[in-house]
Image (cartoon, rainbow over all chains, first blue to last red):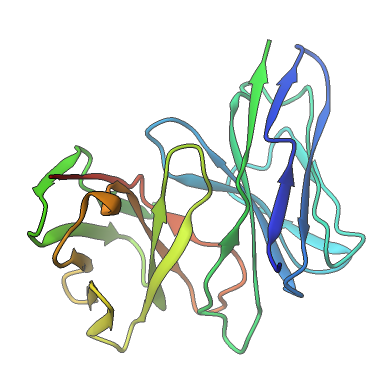
Length: 115
Length: 113
């Protein structure tokens, strides 16, 4: 089955710890994205990547880091510098077809809680 | 700054009626607009895309309109069913397409039997 997989579904982090969220896709999509969703809020873009070994900051990149070593994978690290990391994190992918205008495929999300 | 507004309160509709959701935007000139459905605790699922040069798009019971003069999109679900109950997100994209979408906060739709 083609799709985008995030793991884990739930993640608990202690204060001061870095944690890494996994995102894998087998849709052969060039572009991948990380969004954050807080209760009652829209999705906000953290980072995105259009090609392997390249990525760009989104609107709220501070306290996060990413890598894109393989086309299929786009892990997100939430560092201790992120002041309020508790949120629902969503990974997405899409094609770069022409001028874009393509749908985004989302994973099922990772709910991160700081304890 | 760019701003997208969707009905902030829940929308209650009786089963069988048409549900109409609104998406307004300011300080933005999107090349296209997308609508997604999101169920609790799950990722959004794509429903429809409409481009800036299109007025209307349909898919089964769904219809989207896009008025770039009014800076507004309307999303209609006809013959609504309880299974249509979910949060619906409006998202805008630029011409480049691959630099991410800007999302509204969503409208929580409840279809009552």
